[in-house]
Image (cartoon, rainbow, N blue to C red):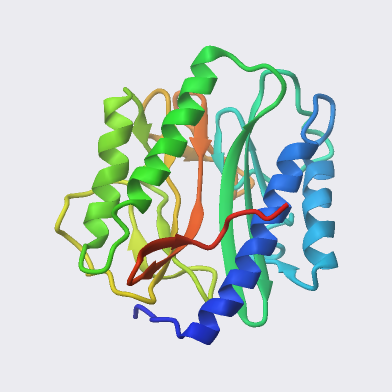
Length: 251
């Protein structure tokens, strides 16, 4: 069931979303070669808690971390670890959720570690552009398929591949709500969008092939090809004035 949010509910979601966005970008600014993904997760955790919120992902279905930290060919759900050290040239997807006053905000961004290859930089730009192409279609009266097609079409134009096994979603009182928002699809199909709907739109883009594999830990998802992957996400509300991004950082 798709839930329409009231003005007061959206105000609470805005608070959660800003905390998540600020924690995410604080983590991005902290990236440096030699640091572990556990250290990065701790920085994010501490910021969220200082703001009176809780990390949405910590303990979610048994996840052991306050943020998903996914390096290079890891698409999503990378578990923070004291054994995984970042190095110059890596790309790192950081996915953060914050929960406060009964609502979640959910956001992700792929960051470079120092100087990265031209190939990696092109991938990051294409994935981010896919996100904004999708957000431009997040309008009352459109359908979920319009968002999905925008992602897939922009990705294909750049010669890349969307991940099909994992998708965007509604977000609010629950971290994952209806509707599902796939990263591929046909325009004019799927649930109709309405004012007050809140969506976490999150393209995941691979250099080679859409196929992914989940590792034995049950969480970490990697590209089957071993190629790089980039992931971006915003929490967006549909309004009479168009899409409003709730997860814009303020720091």
